[in-house]
Length: 244
Image (cartoon, rainbow, N blue to C red; front, side, top):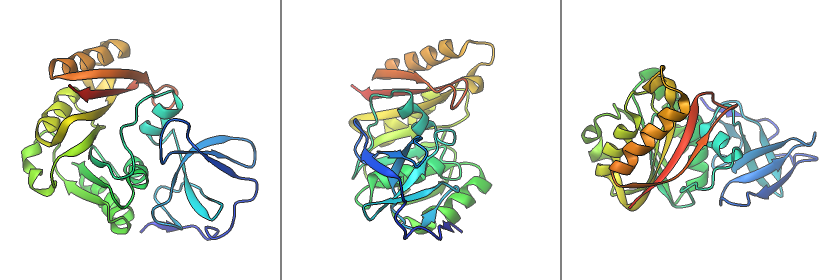
């Protein structure tokens, strides 16, 4: 069950929150000790997903977004220029695990958006269902193999704006593009949390990132940026591309 914060109704003294300069529905939280953190508005007030801190500022509750637990948060802190996820977006999330990052994506897209979550591991999917999807109407969890998009096509309504892929598979870019062929709207976006060691442990991480970027280009994508995620996730990079 999701955890409730006993202090969620109280104003967080000394905390300040302001919108992120680049991305709507992402916020900069300045904590009491001067530390800066990312955050999202909590779609389920008083409930946490992974033990994250809740703060209240001007009667709005925010969830502190841990960059060491979320590759998307790490990428934003590392200078990511494109986050094609906003209020109202429909997102297909491949490799949703137990729901840490998907829950923040759920906050961002809000009640008018939707996050379709594909996860292969039964235990992770159970946590996603019990701790996240049970409290968030804008998340649809699916126990499926992301290598076989035809198996869950019936559960996704229409085309999606963005596909986010975080799977530990050897052919990550191909898997992402295969799903995009089925689900992505024209000129839609893809985000690949590329794990180099799942692809080739003998290659330098940068070489792996470039290899996966080439796969996306060959499949008709304009690769906008490749952002290494160290120190938040070693030997990982976020690759962002748009369908041409």
